[in-house]
Amino acid sequence: MTTDACRTCPLDTDKIRADFPILAKTLHDGVPLTYLDNAATTQRPRQVIQAMVETYEHHYANVHRGIHWLSDQSTDLYEDAREKVRTFINASAREEVIFTTGTTGAINLVARSWGDANLGPGDEILLTEMEHHSNLVPWHQLAERTGAKVVAVPVTDDGKLDLESFDRLLTERTRMVAVTAVSNVLGTINPIEQIVAKAHVAGALVLIDGAQSVPHRAIDVEALGADFLAFSGHKMMGPSGVGVLWGKRELLEAMPPFLGGGSMIRRVRLDGFEPADLPAKFEAGTPPIVPAIGLGAAIDYLGAIGLGAVAQHEHDLTVYAHRVLGELGTLRFFGPPPEEKSGIVSFVFENNRPHAHDIAQLLDRHGVAVRAGHHCAMPLHKRFNVNATARASFYLYNTREEVDRLAEALTQVQQVFRRRR
Ligand code: PLP
Image 1 (cartoon, rainbow, N blue to C red):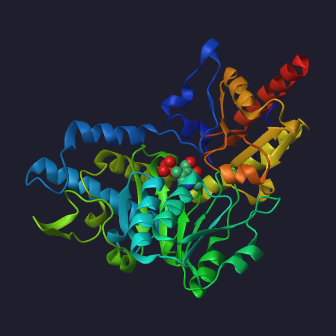
Image 2: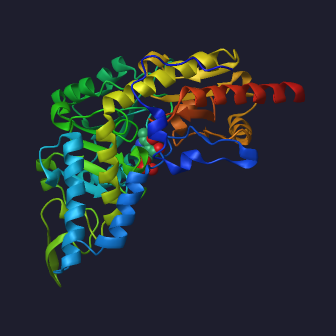
Image 3: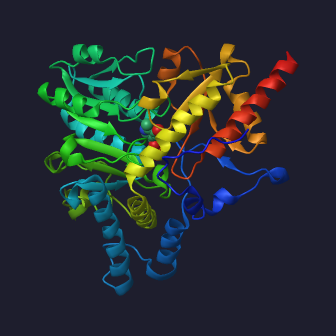
């Protein structure tokens, strides 16, 4: 197969790939690694790895506490990283940026802190059928604790939110709308501006799960007007173990602390405590110091390339992937048309043979890394009457040649299974 060159692609992928040591790896028999599992986690460039090594080798101490030179350096780097996040999402104040363990940690923080303080029987949390379990289970747990109810907006056959149902289900009982900006299975890009505007008219708050959108397309929280945004460092070339909760200052200020411990207090007595100001109030214990600094370096890297170019590059790969994979003639794709979605391509073979898990295992023999399973979205898979899909997902370092490798490997998978039957 000869690769159809992309004439309008904005990125120099050869140059970019040279920054990622892991992408040069070969597997068994010299087979090159084709890493197409970016929705699960991305790889990191040397610049991010180096920023972390540099911190450990030269600037590492605990933050905020020590009155010594090294602690000051570490604190400055950690707070610089917060400032980089603030600029990246255009938040109005650094106090609105809370470092968490990831998207999951951020959503749990809101469900526990805001949810426990504000919800009770008769209240509703409106989410969608396409949510990741991270944006479902914390709300179920909240409902169990408070007597509030979880309501879900259905997904249409072409993988979009059913907006008529959204309008119907959004009522005066809705207190929180929790929705993903981009589906991690379908690649659907949800109309979050419209959702925020309608939710606010109804008097509800909005939490945006940005795990699959913040790494790939620019977001401006000020312009969007949402109330909370959650995302993860490891999905945007940063390290694992760090993520972000952004929230509107007045909401965060009114919320009680979630975790208790060191750093999050102003004063502690034997009979009680006073919480610290933002952002420390929500950062109990020693925070993910070096991971946050790594995330700051990843933001620098993304900023130098530009999210507009990243989104355009991924769009090209997605449209190309649908074209070449569609030529196999035996795949069922999930989600909206490729022109309308993010860089995520989920599929099964018709009649589900071979099964998604077998697809992923056989692709692995060709060095192609994709994910198979329910991708932490069981209700969505049930909606489409499958228990697993195979998912290829792209990032700025992927190429059309890699998509061709996926297509060639899938052709061979198909042949192996035809012979077996
Ligand atoms: N939300 C979405 C849409 C995701 O895709 C993921 C991870 O795959 C998460 C939330 C959870 O992210 P993390 O595991 O980094 O907390």
